[in-house]
Amino acid sequence: MRSRVAALTLLVMGLGAVVRGGVMPEDELLVSILDTHEGLAEVVDNAAEYRLQVVLGLVEEGPDGTPILRQHAFRAGAEYFYPASTVKLFAAVAAAQKVAELRETTGLAIDLDTPLVYHPQFEDGEVEAEDPDNVESGKVTVRGQIRKIFLVSDNQAYNYLYELVGQDGLAESLRGAGLDAPRVVHRLSEFRSAEENLQSPRIDFLGEDFAHSLPTRTAEPLPPAAPIDRSLVGKGYYSGEELIEEPMDFTLKNYCPLVDLQRGLCMVVRPDVDCGGPGFELEETDREMMLEAMSQYPRESTNPVYDPEEYPDTYVKDLLPGLERVVPREKLRIYNKTGQAYGFSTENAWVVNTETGEGFFLAATLYTNADGILNDDEYEYEKTALPFMADLGEAVARALWQIPKKK
Image (tube, rainbow, N blue to C red; front, side):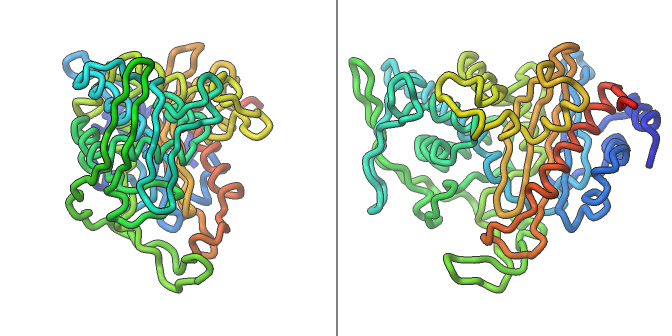
């Protein structure tokens, strides 16, 4: 194991630049940090088996004095990983942009709190307008769905926003920010065909003195997905009650390189930083609302309200258990979006020490599925994935903030 002093020495050496998708060369800084924590060894030593990828992002002064994101990688882009709920960040951004666009083009007072009515798109659907989690109005609103996405990673909330902006709207938002590689092409926890995922229902905006409707829409299909290494996963999967004895093909599922996932978060939480693209066009009040939602613990939310017994502080803060071994919880703020599905666990976070103002970006993904069967709900999340994320958070925080373990 390399010494902590050696790891810190690398901080003053040349840093990696932003990489737009693709395979990113391994970086000595990150490799040395991974080598400082014994709890990481099993996964790191078998990184290909676990499909482990890690990206550490540091903000430093660029050549012209502008803050710039420098990304350090371990196996980033080496193979496919399923991003799961981490793509909800992009849906939240695109939805806020859509509301601002509608307000401008219609001249109506459409905002994040305008009640929405979703009309059925498919035969098994029904009119949806009520949201019991909204303690203020009881109605479905964009603000409410964005808050639920970040606070507890609500899948229905994501689907509402996906349908609002459409598959093409999401793609346009990503392209506009300079994120060309990600593909967000389907709903979550609601199986629909590729053709059905192109469709959005009629959605009514019902203000106090106006009504505006978006008609049913069908997006133009995106270009075919580019080949991605190891997009066949596992040795079998369940389709309903039937076991299909062949790998699951993820080619047509959502995709986002880890470097781009981190760049997207950087564009939202640090718009003052050159994150490797023009960034998202967001109204400042919308951005501040997202920052509040993604950094709050569920118990801190007054709308919606969550039971801390069911939703503890660590519920969607996978790095927190390790970070608070270094810095007390009350001195930490984590702006993040996690994802977990099909055996993949992914974290994408901006971690801030509120006492010192120091912060770092950390994104990581790993695959834990010992039996090789997908959709059997037998994944090693609790045994392997979550402990790894906690230890990773601890290792990075200790190295960057130079806080040794207590003896």
